[in-house]
Length: 157
Image (cartoon, rainbow, N blue to C red; front, side):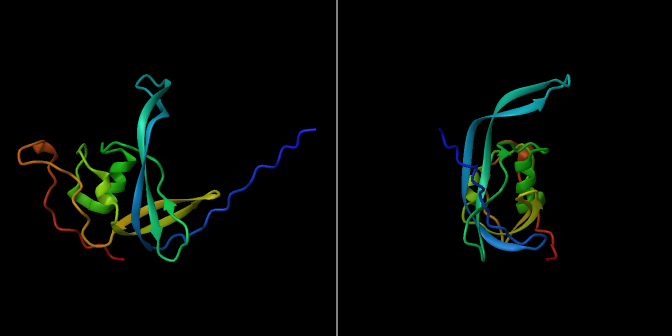
């Protein structure tokens, strides 16, 4: 007789939802050549290999680390990573720019989460203070992608 143990259920530390939680970005995880489904221009479902990233947060008042979703390593204007960066940088970041995401490690942030079934997902993130510059463009290089020197908009919290 072979004993098959029941599937173990993992309990995740829950955070409050619909309220700001302060914390810090403590690391990033890079996933190389992940299979991703997409629909091509002809409407046919295909597979492609993509690189992905997720960020790890230490949130105030919580014992365990919490994570963002995996995001494709792309700064195109429709990518999840670009939208994540827009939450932090606002209009100062522009699409299709080369960035170094390691510069975000140590950034003090505040986050908002929502329940999504048995999981919780990050829905908003804001920088506490001025975030570091994570792009490296020399004068004249990629002039169409230069970061605008715009003051931070007032954001009520």
